[in-house]
Amino acid sequence: MSSGAKITQKIGFIGSGNMAEAMIKGLLSAKVVDPQQICSSDPRKERCQSLIDRFGIKSTTDNAEVVKHASVVILAVKPQILPKVCDEVSSQLDSSKLVISIAAGMPIRAIEGHFAAKTRIVRAMPNTPALVGAGATALAAGEHATSADLDVAKQIFDAVGKTVALDEDQLDAVTGLSGSGPAYVFLIIEALSDAGVKMGLSRENAQALAAQTVLGSAKLLIDTNEHPGRLKDMVTSPGGTAIAGLHTLEAGGLRTTLINAVEAATRRSRELGEAAANAKKPTGK
Ligand SMILES: NC(=O)c1ccc[n+]([C@@H]2O[C@H](COP(=O)([O-])OP(=O)(O)OC[C@H]3O[C@@H](n4cnc5c(N)ncnc54)[C@H](OP(=O)(O)O)[C@@H]3O)[C@@H](O)[C@H]2O)c1
Image (cartoon, rainbow, N blue to C red):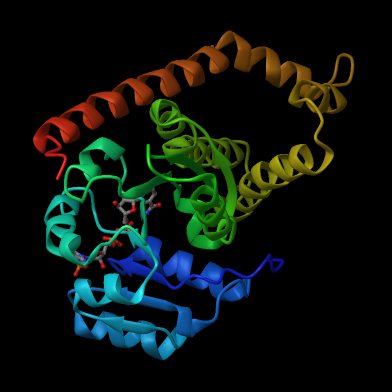
């Protein structure tokens, strides 16, 4: 990963699980922060020690200590634990601090309800490829977050992949597309591998070829910035193999099925977000 501009803020992670570790690793390998700038918390002492040993960061079992240390506080716990954690640290959180939540489906207004009025919040929706530095993250700024806050959040998430900024009401669609998307792509890779096995390839070779084809096609699209239809046409010679395969995919309704999948996942994300917001109404402290 190429190194971007240095981040000067101290960054605190509340919750030191998979996502926090991916981000810590990404930030350090992109050299946009030094280990002394990062502090994390986790209920398990051995988990904290492991992060200290491997990354040279500070790590503690005390969430409040992370908030005291940091000017950017990243909420990286599971959504169901988030309300409790917010209440626990809210007294340490003054207006100088930016809060970034990565909790899936938790609306900004639900988080705001736990903190002092005018708390600056950015909500992020990353996806699992962030664990290998190839994530797709969408960011949405809360009412009180500034464009500088959004820039800091972008710098942080650029360390684990690509980032776009949009309005919060589009995050359900993001959840339906890139948030849930890795599941769709894994299913496609698995199906292509099965197809290769059916046609006589070993499982190992079939999976390697299927995964590399997905990776390579995405890279070709991104690197050339070509329309996907044009790149498809480049593979499709008259009377050839690819057009025979494409005809079968069209007959099976692949496009419609994928559109329906994203639509269903978006609808489900909206339902879950509404339930989360209603579980704890903002008090406007
Ligand atoms: N993984 C993804 O790709 C992905 C994608 C999009 C969004 N997200 C969001 O990212 C957040 C973190 O996901 P994750 O996959 O990193 O989950 P995770 O691996 O389970 O990490 C959460 C961490 O928080 C710790 N924790 C539990 N209770 C805590 C408390 N009271 N105070 C501080 N830490 C506490 C957990 O410790 P224990 O294990 O000991 O309970 C765990 O280490 C979630 O909200 C999820 O919705 C994740």
